[in-house]
Length: 388
Image (cartoon, rainbow, N blue to C red; front, side, top):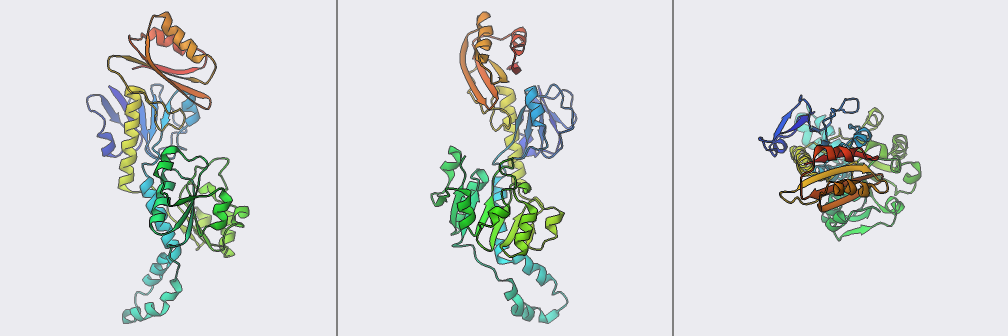
C-alpha cells in the first residue's frame, strides 16, 4: 500500500487515477511515500524521511525545497504544459484588450449609469476615445518556445499575425509542434527591434531576470506592447513604468502585479490567473498523479526538476533496482560489481545523467535482498537506492 499526503486540494479527476486497493491519500498521514502539492509552502516544512517523491500540480516549484530534496534522493516533479492552454488563452486575451481598449471602454460605459435615455447618444459621441489597432497583420515576437510559447505562436499565426519566435534551446518535441508559419528570429534583439507585440515565455533565472530593461526597451519600436505571463522578475518594473510614462511602450500586460504596477493606469494587471481554469487544475492533477504512480510503481522519471528523465519499460517477473547517485567516475562499475558478487544477472539497464546527478534503472533476473541494497547505499556518492 502506497501512502500519499495531499498538502492542497487535488482535483478528484487526478486522485481517481489511484487504485483504491493500493493507494491511501490524506492531508495528514504517517510515513507517506509521496507528497502531492499545489501552492502550499514546503520550504520550512520537515519532510518525512519516508518520502520518495514530491509532485507539484503546476509548472512552478519555488514552494518546494528542491536542493534539500536532491540531497536526500527525493525526486521532485512538476507538470509543464498541463496548464498551457489556459495560459495561452489569457495571453491572446491580453493582446486583444491591450490593443482595442475594451476594458477602459467598459469601465467608462459603467460610469454612464443614471444618464437614462442619453446613454446611446453619449456612447456614439465619445466611443472614439477608445479606438485601438487590430492585431491582424501585426508582428508578434514570442520569446521562449516551450509548451505555452508554441501554442501562442501557432494561434497568433491562425489569427493573421506575423510571428517571430526565439528559443536557442527549443526541444525536438516543441519544434515538431510549431507552425511552419512561425519565423525564426536569429537573436533576442531581432525580436525587440522588429515586433509590435512581445510576449515572454521563459523561466526566471540568473540569465533571464530583468531581461526587459532600459537597454532593451531602447531597441524596441515606439508603442510596443509587452506581455509577461511567465514570471514577474523578467521585467524591471521601474524601467517599464518609465517607458510607459514616456509613451515609448503603449501597454504592459502582466499576470504578476505588485503595488507599484497597480498604480500605473497603463499597466494591465491580471491577478495571476494564467492557470486558473477548472480544466487546467484537472490536467495538472492528472499529470502529477500519473508521474507519481509511474515513479513509485516502476521507478520511471518524467518531468522531474532535479533528476534526469529516465524511462524504461517494465518486464513482468523481474526485480527492479533504482539507484540515484552523484555523477562520479566508476559508479556503474561499483554497483554492478556488488550485483555480480551475489551472482545476480542484469537483464536490462538504463543510466541517465543530468548535471551532477545520475539515475539508474536496473532490471535483474532474480530478487535483490535488503542487505544488498544496503551495500549499494553505502557506496560513496549514492544518495538513494530501492527495489520494486
